[in-house]
Image (cartoon, rainbow, N blue to C red; front, side, top):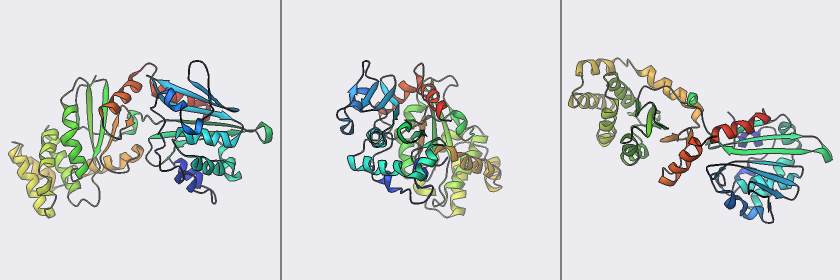
Length: 346
């Protein structure tokens, strides 16, 4: 799915600078905040807060906050004044006055408005952490903008198929990890966060997906080796061994790494003959390749990429985990509230 950045840049000089000028703030900056925090954004100075605190008025422009479990998961902006609409969106993105002015310039361009009249729902940037819907109707004095920025909650069907799963099938929280055995950050995640998730099988169901990076020489072979171990029911223990020994096999030549992978299998009491045959004949190479190809819907920009209940994680902090669990498990959930809003843009 193309991003809003590409939408801005799609026809002629619609200047990607309009987003770059937003001070580098993450698109979802004010999403996840409380309604009170959103209303206090500097760009919303002078806004009037309606009873209930979920509707804000900025001149003739209205901001309706979708709040789930006390957190803002979406903001619907409606108005005729292009400048106020751009200012409101910049505020949602925690930007500056300069960023709002650049966004206003982009919104005022005829080519951009022609595309906005067709309606659009897409991620605001290539990271895919939030979605942005835009529709422009009417002309002249009757012109009206509807803009909706919301947390992007991926459905389960967007994740690559994997049999490397641990945790109870009825666990209330689902974690998807897209990882590379030769990636230092993945190794850190495996050592620091994943043990806690694996230790709570009634709370977390954990899926591991392969995404070996091309510049890690032995990563693909390591993924194949882990699948050969998985064939014998030992993916997780073998993955522990791979991450623990990456300083050894990661620096080895390809033939040396293959021998080491076999040695690890032997030490874990796997059927060494079956393991070696599986690895040396690349029996499960296609399985790894399918996971790589299937990662296209996950907005993967590097490894590790981690999702909790369909929401991409940034910090793995306790606060972030608690917030995501709260909004995704609430009734109605963030996903259902957001989907209802998006229907009018399609």
